[in-house]
Length: 379
Image 1 (cartoon, rainbow, N blue to C red):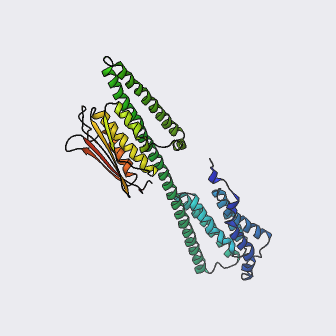
Image 2 (cartoon, helix red, strand yellow):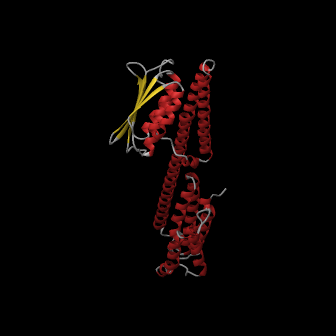
Image 3 (cartoon, helix red, strand yellow):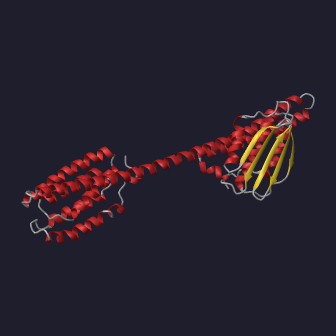
């Protein structure tokens, strides 16, 4: 099955033109110094055109090799002078070794060389020069070396192209893999956080349902709002999977969205305080800082219900320091492993050339601290 790259174009004709020009112009001059050879006539020039024209048919390697071989061997067998037509031989051999695997190209070139040697011996026989055995063997050896060099050159070009293609495929796979990991992390951050908030708010509603219906109603309304937001995030994630470019149409959340995030977590039963301000940030830093805070608060909801959390934002000329600490709670505190969330936070910081530490605090509770360069790799 042919591909777009295998279809011939007018550009394919250009490599044949120098050989065609050399053959048409130089053959008569070569004949002047070889009086024993047959005079070039219409058939000779027709064979020159065929031999050079075969180089333009690189998409049909076997027919091109056959056409060139027939033209060159007929030219020599008919006793025409040694001339520029022979330049097409190493060129077609190089083309064959570029297009075919080594074993197949080696077999084809070996067969071509055998036919070429027979044609040369026939020409020497017609010119009564077979007696110069040393000259014949020298010419044969020279042609073996020329075709071997052309074969090696073509094989090297083919291997280099194959290596480049492999690199491009590997890069494409890496990009796809990174995009999938990013989408998976986005799903974990947004949907996971929403579900954690919903679970906590539903628990609050059940706990106060009988003694405080109004408070239970407020918690369920928060559940409804969070559910809608989570469904919206899921819809965008699915749309991004179907059409990768669609994800770029939706701006990523940033620290400007912290008040809404804090309100959701407050409704889940965690007290939160916020110190400091980040100001205007590069978009990648802004998004990473928000995701780190979101995941840290999600872990508090899951593992330290009833704790008090503190968010600190400190900006310097070179970096943004994000710290989220909690006092521990009914869940026993955030475990050191905390599933994929901690790995995700490390990835968010690492993508910008920053660092992140997460672990239990000496006085109880858990602490997450991230240093995000403002001119990091991802900015």
